[in-house]
Amino acid sequence: MSTEVRFSADDPDIHQPYRAAADRYTHLGYRRVGNSGLLLPPISLGLWYNFGDNKPFDTQREILHHAFDRGITHFDLANNYGPPGGSAEYNFGRLLHSDFKPYRSELIVSTKAGWPHWAGPYGNFGGRKYLLNSLEESLERLRTDYVDIFYSHRVDPDTPVEETIGALDTAVRQGKALYVGISSYSAKRTERAIEAARALGTPLVIHQPAYSLVNRWAEGGLFDTLGTHGLGSIAFTPLAQGLLTNKYIQDPNAAPSAGRTSFLDGFLSEDNLARLRALNAIAERRGQSLAQLAIAWVLRDGGATSALIGVSSVRQLDENLAALDNLDFTAAELAEIDEAVGTGDTGVNLWAGSSEL
Image (cartoon, rainbow, N blue to C red):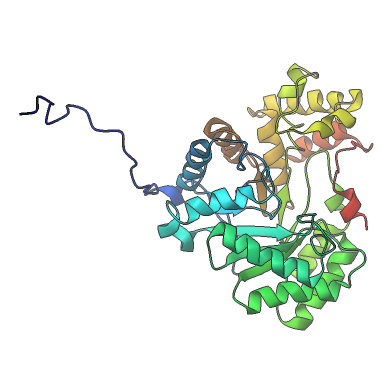
């Protein structure tokens, strides 16, 4: 007879099915995207860097579970997110096919195509073949039949906008995207894209511009255009790729996180460090961190519909969500912020190559 103990005093460590928090919709309000029927949380989660093969999958799962439990329903991807490119979609697809499968109807999943993704002449910019082939591959990686939003990720200066927008229209008519949008298009090109989309009967509903305290190009006509035509906006890099945090105030020589070597090309100039110190003083008086001030400012009245953040931990996610505790600004605070930033070029708009075309 076996002498092995036939019972254990402790619960075995086994995988438990994920159950979303019952109170997940009590934390955040939801904002209408322009004149559409789409609603987004004020803070959405971007999976640009920390959700590829460079981070443990268990860490990714923990962050994504916590985000949804806190009311974040929108997860933003692109065909080239990782690293390596495509791995963020693949990893998120694992969750979408398992833990999040019962909640697919509660999620807003977006993806994009436009930047280089595969070799040869058909894996870049905004041609019809690239956009539709890329979407097909994204759906395979995501293990879903459709995405909620599909974007043209950047301007293609050599392809007629009618072709690019026509591909987005096809995606909707094929049932592979529910809504479509554009990213990093100038106000003028946005006007042309809006006209092309309306002519096809599939209106654009959202624009995704880079926008932050120190990168205000979207105020030069883009937001006015979006308002006139009833589009919403979701601001990516509201923290200017991590510049608008206390990290570089404390140590200007700190190594950039997430492989952001672009900081080495002048982001941490003396002028920008002076801006950070002045903005941080304003944040402290408001009872916020610099990052919280930056997110709150992007979401102020007249700002973006949603702020698209990236995080590497649950703690960082909660710190960013705390920005929503104080979204109100006095006229004096806004004026002081404008004075702190000034009118000089901060050099942080890495996407000017598209948005200035």
